[in-house]
Length: 142
Length: 128
Image 1 (cartoon, chains in turn green, brown):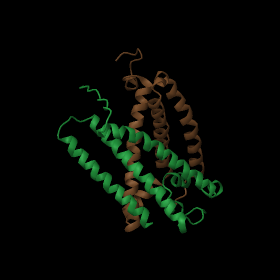
Image 2 (cartoon, rainbow over the protein chains, first blue to last red):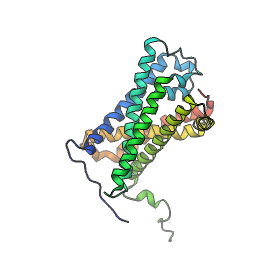
Image 3 (cartoon, rainbow over the protein chains, first blue to last red):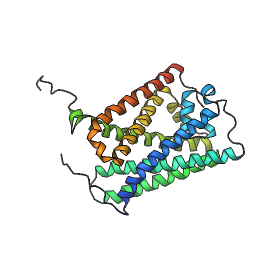
Image 4 (cartoon, rainbow over the protein chains, first blue to last red):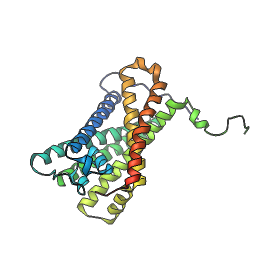
């Protein structure tokens, strides 16, 4: 088996280093956003009015569609709607970027520096942009 | 193959036990989450816009408790292991204790995951 060592990202303004920092910051940010969603769901009465899967959905993607069968008050009224839409857009932006960069890192561990690399980067970039736009459309339309 | 203990589970020893397993699981759970969230976003779009049968089928799959058990492990493991990586990156002198850190992380993951799975399976799932 051919063993190739992984190159350590150089300090500075390059993709590897920026994404190295981004993976850590976005990971922490998603943990805090999830904790915030869960805490606010508990404040709204999740302890007695939600089952566990609904609470999980509410934590990581606080979308009204995720709580239609629970007894949580309507969250699409007034300022609450905008607040939850901002929360959702933040969390899906972090998640999509974190996730697709992770896929890029896994793929690039197993391919050479050939033409496959820019090609697969292009495919992943298109998928990232497409899924992000679709997700934001779903959020704003629901 | 001889029976001197070299049979089976050799892959766990490739480049060193717990750390390699943590790295492998971090990759697999991460890919699992990407697959689930990607499918979920696209299916939600088609469900919302067209109410398509395929989207309803996909939704039924990931609302089943068996699927949730897997997804929940992926999320919990990826979060806790990711926090360990962040902590060890910020304080590299702690790398000396990374094996202890991995044991500590399993002591955190197993109770959280076990309790949640217990509740999940006991009460089943209600769609919503």
